[in-house]
Amino acid sequence: MQIVPLAELAGRVRLLQQKLQQLALDGALILQNTDLFYYAGSMQQGFFFVPATGDPLYLVRRSLERARQESLWGKILPLRELNRLPASLAEHGYGGIKRIGMQLDVLPVNQFKRLLALFPGAVPVDLSLQLREIRMIKSAYELECFRRAGEVALAVNRQIPALLQAGKAELQLSAEIENLYRLAGHQGLLRMRAFNGEMYFGHVYAGINGAAPTFLDSCTGGSGVAAACPQGAGWKNILPHEPIGVDYASVYGGYVLDHTRVFSIGELPADLKRAYAVALEIQDELVKRALPGASCAALYSLAVEIARVYGLEDNLMGCGAEKVKFVGHGLGLEIDELPVLGQGSPHLLEEGMVFALEPKFIFPGRGMVGLENVWCVGAGGPEKLSPIPDELVTVPL
Image 1: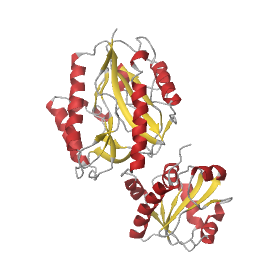
Image 2: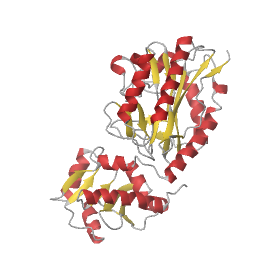
Image 3: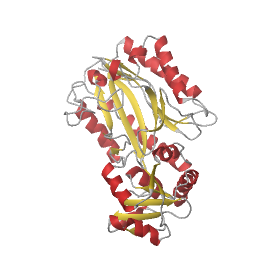
Image 4: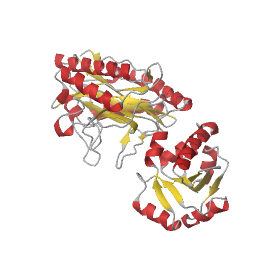
């Protein structure tokens, strides 16, 4: 089992404590799964309390045994009843809480009300943005997780051409690819912070299904197998000369490496190949400018301008009302982290940020062409963390 080093966890807590002190908070109460893992090194159900000063305390409801196996923090204690939470904190010197930070972007209202009742008179302060912005900057440990995920992605991607067959259902192809990932240790689940956001491995879509919109904040999604899960691979059979999108995320140590490649059985039509070349140009031009201090909103505007030059603005990242207003997004333990390379984004790039850049063109009735790679911002230019070759892959008929 991979254990997050204590020095890594301690560094994250120090950054959070700086925020707590700036906001004059007594502490932060962490209970959402991803943030629990980020700060505690474990995702066992409970509360990770980070005081403004001093050592954190992990109060576990279930499973205490596993929490002690997974987390290297010293104070990992049982919490038998929720009502005991204030007393348990007080027993370790953290009583009399007046201002407490919470994850109000993801905390259910009923849970929020119960916690407020336990701390009468305490003022809840939303720490959502601060928590997400701390996670924007990746450590050396986190970058190594991305690189390990990239090794798996490359190994799986090399096997995909042999799986392509005209007449094969998207669903079968996705099952074969997912089997390769699972055997390589993929966790299966991809976590998203957005309300009702959910994803499993990723998406495979062929031809027309590459242009099928869905509820996700994404320009692609696939048809899925039913209205109960309207995304991902469906029952459509793959046809020659149509774009086959493989939009998956390799994962190592919880860190998500999102990547998209386009395949075809037989050559794609010339206009689709031209659009793919434009997607490559957008990637290359944005990467040149993705330096510390670059505006995320300006990078998005540049992508739109390049697409406009080639008459493809209306197809970039969707069409009509289904268009999304971004061309890249942050990555980490969740697939929808900050920063967003999109319209109105307030963030400037900083060294250590990791983002997926995904210039994609949608052609209604025909599909998607484009690509997605993951980059880490560095002083001398971005490091490509997804080592898969960028070229279109054409399999002979």
